[in-house]
Image (cartoon, rainbow, N blue to C red; front, side, top):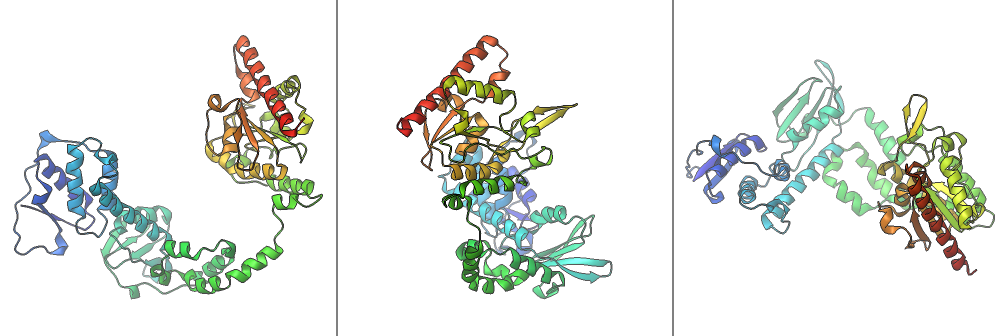
Length: 472
């Protein structure tokens, strides 16, 4: 029987060194007893020393195992060391063991790791520092009661987040202290060792009460995310019972005084144009993503508010950014010609973009177009959704991959979905084709002529489909 004594309950490095040595000698998990030095141990157990280290028998394990072990070892389950060693032996013996989600051992260890991650998140969310004075000036002290051995593992987060503060976090097991340069630790503390409050708490309570939204209150979800065990450490928790009690009355008052949403306002006679104008004005102040910082202005959609057909481009170009209107540059001119060849009346269509600000890279005096990323497209989907809800078209045509993603909410391959209708939840039909700028970038003239003809054919099919839906 082999006995391994680790220095601390979260001694991952010690466990890893011992586990590696045991595994290299093929020691069965049942023949190993794991304990923490401070825990005492079995007075009658005895045990052998670890087998010698074998430099010639090094081995590697998947990174996924290391990540899982680093978290699971912080759990308070006394069997965690033995479980991890058993899993290590299984990973060594069987390729792909970390992908076998049905394995009871892997599932049990994963449950431990998930509980640790949740506890680390709770600590980051619910630690509240209170100011107090010591011999060196101001120090901020917090009390927290973790469920697992997460304090040392979580220290880096607080060092980065509060790098310029002098702070201490006291817990029943250990305490950690930061002086702005170095982290030290000390023994566990008691709740009474931390201050009860400070003047900043009144400000914090006022902020919390101001941002509390009764219309979004879900008591069950709140209790799950903020269990009552943490309330006594949170200054804002004292407000929660009264805020919950008054939520229904506050929600009713909000509904009574709130303006109608765009979609509801548009249903009132004569309100569609006003609702669209209000939406556009609000979009002009959009700061949902960083693109607004460098662009000249928001380029909103334009066209009839009752248009049966909507075209979505990817984003404004250089000329659109300067003019504040969509599809006025070279790609827009090609688009106009293609619509005319396909027999589609642009004056009866609404044109917009999936992203409302110009994204570019500056090269001297030139601004070169850059494709928007997924986050920028997602940030702008709110505006696009509002436009669609307001106009309620029968057909929506997305031109380009970014436009398709903005319309469908997911990435699609144009070649796979091109030329066929896609039913949308709002009852409209979606069609996908290329963006006119793609045609301008084709270097081969013969290929460009071929692809332009195909683009015109896509528009012609859409026009025929629109007429069919209209019954004419």
